[in-house]
Structure formats: C-alpha cells, structure tokens
Amino acid sequence: MRAKSIAKPVDGFGRGHTMARVIGMAIVLVPILVWFVWRDPGHVVSSTAATGTVAEFHKPIALLTLANGSQVRVYVGPRGATPGEELPLIADRHADGSVQYRVDLTALANRHGKR
Image (cartoon, rainbow, N blue to C red; front, side, top):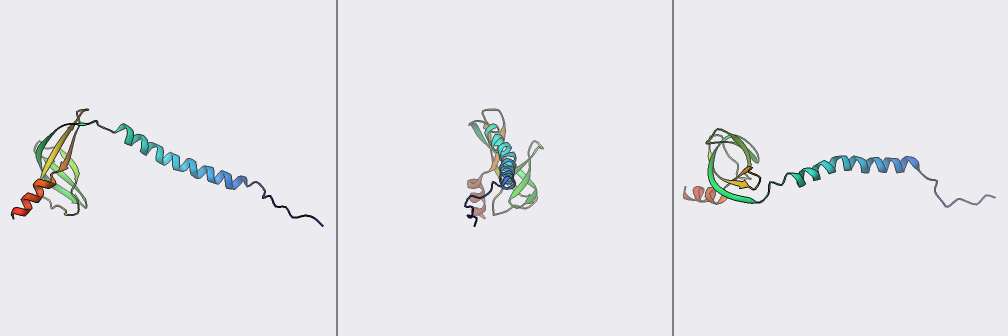
C-alpha cells in the first residue's frame, strides 16, 4: 500500500500568474507615483484674487475663461455652476513660476449670503 503524499506539487502556472499580476499592478502604479513626485510645483510664493466666467460645467469640474482669455479647469464642488456665471478665484503662484487657480469659497459664500 502506498502512503499518501502530504506535499503539494509545485504549481508553476499559479506562481507565474501571481507574478504577472504583481508586474501588471507595478506597470500601472509606478508611473502614477512618479507623476505625483515630479509634478510638485514647489511652495506657494504669492496669491492674488482673480475672476473667471464659467464656459462649461461637468459636475464637479468647471471650465472657466479668465480675463486674459486663457481657460482653466477648477473644482467647483457640489454646489455646481452655470455657464455664464462669474466665479471668484484665487491664483496661487508657485516657486517654479506656475499658476494654479482655485475657487475662493469664502468670497463665493459671502456673495451668495448677500442675495
């Protein structure tokens, strides 16, 4: 009578499949992590007030046209925005010279509170 084997045979397919999944996740995650590390524009050097007119709105992002004619996309939040509406913005100038815009929520709340 033969004794039953307790050890499992080595499953090359299972190990290969697991390794392929790990490599696949790395191919997706590594570029994302590199982008987050290298996109850092540095600290904020100055902030100024600006305004933008809503050209398009696709919840929760609005496409705004600035006074100089350029367009930027900003997070508007759950309150939404309507095309033609003028939104108060804050323009943050970073150490690398780039400018990033964000909605001035305080000015927006004060403006809506007065109505």
